Image (cartoon, rainbow over all chains, first blue to last red; front, side, top):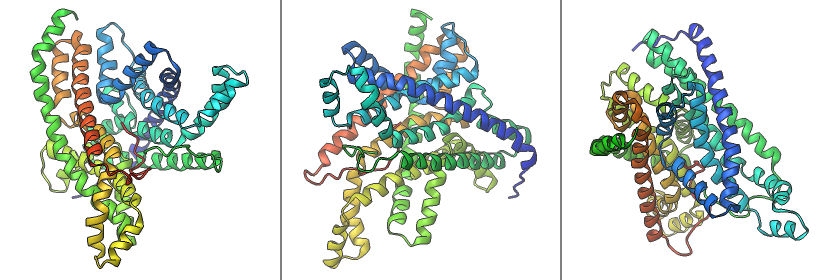
Length: 226
Length: 233
């Protein structure tokens, strides 16, 4: 078994792909935060129809494979007349997916806060919105960091599926180099190591964020699972 | 895409279900691998010699850190280079199985550590060997405590079996693709059909595991915080 690595020629392309991977991850996570917060609000405070819409949305995006969701956006939407660029389709599908999971994390974090706080805020005359903005959400956003970090790293890895939508992310770049050189195994070893490196850096950074933001004594009110 | 399209998909539904059976076969092959290796890795990390524990941790770190698609390609193209000529199915099952073992080991490790350590001490003071204490006292409880997190892993892995599409296995995504290729206007409804199948499967599976959890629960012996930190997908 002889392994031949040609890092000098491979790295430029792979690193370009890595940049695309990071772009996609950041964009889809951002989308997930915005939509996820909205969904969490809908499930916590919304009227019946809004609550049910949010619940169905979350159930759909958590209960179906992410690859199916990608194909629904990339192949399905054009059949309805909406043709998106591969990159946009990828970000959209991934963003919708992560929004459902993030919604539940936000909801869990908000619900783990003592309910007396909202009560107290309302009793001094704050509107629900003001209470959310100044009291509940700042604490919830701190509490949500552990599961949210997990989600960020998960999406970084799942972003590799956009290669099915012909996006040249790290996975796509690897595939191209591999099919050119037939060194599939070696190329994907390097791709794997690159993903591991990014995950390592990201995990380290998120852990530091968590300790930096932590307020001793103000942990989760209830110990949730995972 | 109108009533004709829906009718076409409906008439092909049996074929969709048949193709899904391949996914379920991959699932059935990979879960035992993940389970057995996962428990082994978890035991090595909790009770093993420091070097063994380090190797186990490295295993877990690798298989949790590398994306599933990359692992699939590594196994698909790599096993042959090492002289192991396996089918795409085998490569897929191994890749996804080892990947799952990384996540399952984290779940079991958390569950094992959630069993009060005093129990092992008590068992040993009764004359049990360490091995006996672990296998008859700790593991049964750990497995029970792990059920909630494990059911997250179950759903996640079930849905991820669709990724083996990447290495050419003839499962449901591949079948959906053949339908779509000849009827591009039916893409939406085709993939919605696949989505529905998996949605039913994951919902039933989670419900079943929930029932199992309730039936096995011992009042007073729940331990909060058991299970791994794996986000449920």
